[in-house]
Image 1 (cartoon, rainbow, N blue to C red):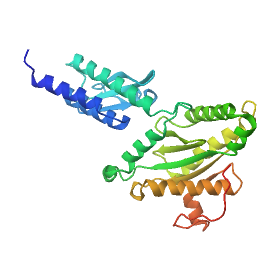
Image 2 (cartoon, one colour):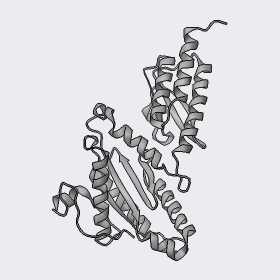
Image 3 (cartoon, rainbow, N blue to C red):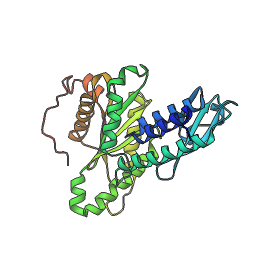
Length: 288
């Protein structure tokens, strides 16, 4: 049987999906493929909790799509109420789900189930990469680096199994405390990074400090009280990733050096003259 132009397009879409190596580009390729296939005005992926009937029109179509291990998202097809080629669409959905699952497993920290360092590098490349100039000027993001206070002492005193349990419980608390659109990473050891999307610095500080208080107030098995320190900065893609991490790190170091169990904001430290614009912070610092 001779291949049609439609068949060629379908094959191209399917192959393109399998080539994607991170979730952002996979979502981008998938929504573009569905948009072209159905000639829809717009196609987008949403968290089920963030998509309500109030956001929809009578011409919108919403489909469930599997993402990773049992996760479900909503595919919103705007102004395209009639799905003519359901078989091709189903093929796209299946390939998308399989590829998402593969990417999800490769970018997930096996202990905490948060995003891992690979996922961090991929998302930061996208955020700070060449396309950063095409993003909306009013996009607001903040980055927080969190570190468990005296974690080495916890491991030495109670053993690494209890240390791992602390990290798992903290990760669970993070997933409950922060929104689905925020990015939660285990950056390494007992250090976590949170990227708060669509959040100004004032809001980000309030949310991160609320999480710090929740951790301090919790009674952890065997260990009891555990605290965290955090450093926070605003994300400006034009500054670059290295400078952004350095700012959050300097704020974290200040939190550690001045008593721990607190959230420090880089901009406030600059304004107070505690650190300067060169990101230099003097003094010896014992992180553990």
